Length: 302
Image (cartoon, rainbow, N blue to C red):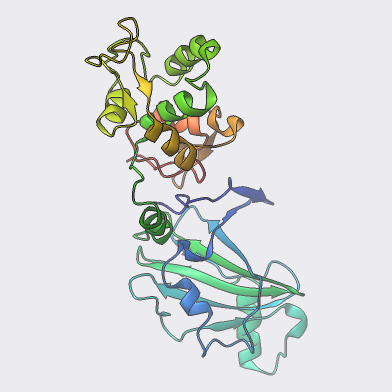
């Protein structure tokens, strides 16, 4: 996975040419333990920190204070969660410079962004910064990374809901249409359901449909064709219908804002190629990719 594959993360933000997005505490393995370690160089843990991931177009990590403040930076080995080299290094602003103190000069140079480090795929850059009363944890993940972001969240999610089913994007779209956005329990939505299946290119929605996404849901028990069922009228047999389990999974897994569901928004990936961000865009471009939630972009191809 790439840096932008973050479960439950909002779209990227760009300010003055810098692109970043928020992440949750457990999205990056070992990071919270590192921040909360007793030997951390700050006097006490800065509470209510805002966590951000910064996007870089190459492997370069450039620690920097982006305003008046003080901070620390380090390079974390993602394999064991340990800091590389000398551990945490301090950053200060120019106003605190003591030209007669070599250590002060070095700290200000780091704070001004005058030094850069090349990260390996097994490393991330971490900055813990306090701007006034506002503390941040800022992480730089190189485009080519071995880090699996959000792995713990997904594991916990499925452990708490063991009846959940792993879907691909096409199956998730089909379930969302049948269970939420053109709900099958509403007869007047029939034409809308058919249209949406065509728009998302996951159909056709018709009797004995050979759609592999509908057939995938049938195999999971989330859709029932009822071809051989005597309790269904002959006119409805063979027509794919969402099951009670399908409604449950639609509510648990694919209930999202309609604007997100219909979005064909694209975003720039690490090497400049455009990748799908909106959910409809993901379905159209990557229908067979694992469904990882509706936020956080899509898998980069290559």
